Picture 1 (cartoon, helix red, strand yellow):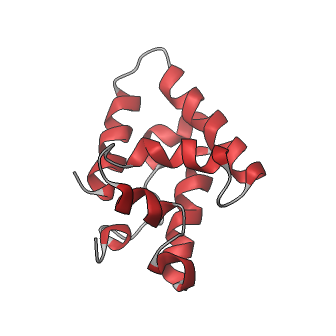
Picture 2: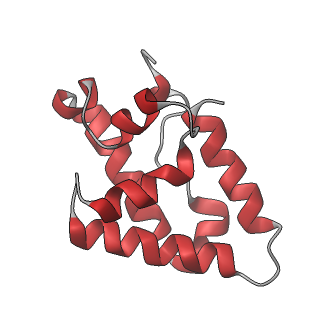
Length: 108
């Protein structure tokens, strides 16, 4: 599955969780990623929510370790993906806010 589809899947998963636990976990992971910074273990943990387990290329993209490292648009997308989840309950519908559909998958 693409990164974009994984993001949309996570949104649906959150919307279908009446306990709000998935959203809370995602929020805590995103805050840890922001504090830890790009390349940290916390960043990696958070980004694994949006990649296929068998796709190191997708994880490298979200870790900023491939062409994303030097592309200002890609860097902005990655930053939004982390920042959007920090909002908590609003994340249920806004996780993909300000993301250009498909940009994070470009070239993968």
